[in-house]
Image 1: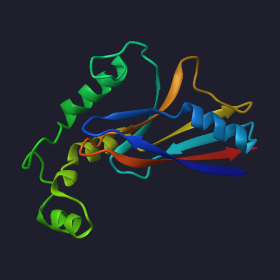
Image 2: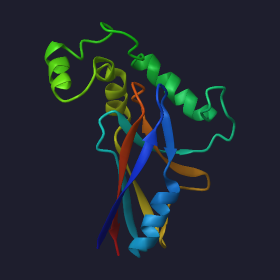
Image 3: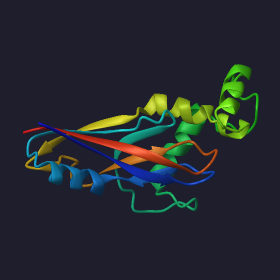
Length: 164
């Protein structure tokens, strides 16, 4: 049996946004009636990722939990924040023209760091369901992360439950 839902999330402007979607996932599993199986949490947005991680409890001065801020800092060492043109080859003139024709502004196109980070981390997680509950361990949570800091926007997280 399969059961799916999607949810809208609102990301913040000019900062990486973490959404704790654990409750949405647990509610979807409960609604599905599936007791044994798997749940996949997925982003079709190419600048977003989905991870499992424990809560850090402590907050950084940026408003993120310390472990979340550490992840962002590590990713920016690998793929530095795109703060101006020329840091990356993308977007080139063809991409900028295409974006303009589709209502995007140039600033919104300079999100190469977010595309790279999403490619590295991945855009989905799959978690085992045991007795109707996602097996996240004692401290595990599921986070949907929007790495695109160019503007606030609505995002969609997809949840698919598969099993018996």
